[in-house]
Structure formats: structure tokens, C-alpha cells
Amino acid sequence: MDYEVIKLNVSNDKIREYKQFEGLKLYSTIIKSQDERTLTNKRIYVTKKNNYVYYERTDTNWNFWSNPKNHQSSFVPVEENHHILFEVASDLSAFSKYLGEGLIQKIQIKQLNGEIKLTKLCR
Image 1: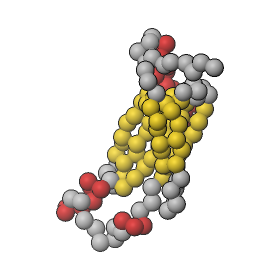
Image 2: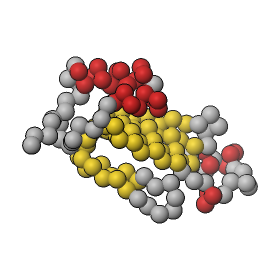
Image 3: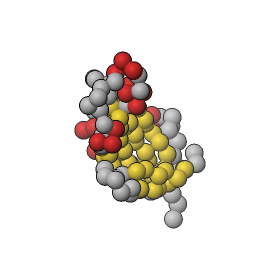
Image 4: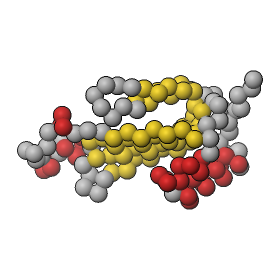
């Protein structure tokens, strides 16, 4: 598989800061909050140097707020902050605290069975 350039926003404030690396996405999901006001995107990447990256971003669910039945005068979009978590580890199991042991094991099994093919960086 060919690695692609991944560029992720890692800033929790107004100033944009990005991390860029070559890698492959192993896992991605989007979860709505219980009140449906926010969306949390969780992803795992493997880098060309065989490290793992966990990226989690929580943002306003604009589809919820654009619906007239959900309109609230107290909602001020400018005041809505997003939350970003970016972590790098050499072992995939380090991310079980975010995704649970079961999911991490499924990803590891897929890697062992060759369902996720990674090319090693040769030096």
C-alpha cells in the first residue's frame, strides 16, 4: 500500500497548528453526542516509520443546529470551541484507553492476518 501525506489540525485555539506525516488510516468513526449537538471523529493512522497516531476531534454538529426545530437563541457559534487530541505511540495498544481493548485487538488481528498491508520503510 502506498502511504499518503496526512495533515491534521492539532490546535485547540484560534491559531492553527498542523502535524503532517506520511501514513495510512487504519480506523475512523464519527460519534454523535447524546444530545446530538456535537460530533466526535476518532481516527488511528500508522506512519511510514511504523508509529501509530491517534487523532480525536470534537466539533459542533452543524446539521443539528441548522434544523429550525433545534434553534436556540442561547447558541452562539463563535463561542463553540472544538476539542482536539493528538497522540503518537509505538504500540497500538496505547490507544485502548480511547477505543477499548476489543477494537484495538480487532485492528491488530487484521494487521496480523494481512488484511491491512503495510510496507516497511527500508534504510
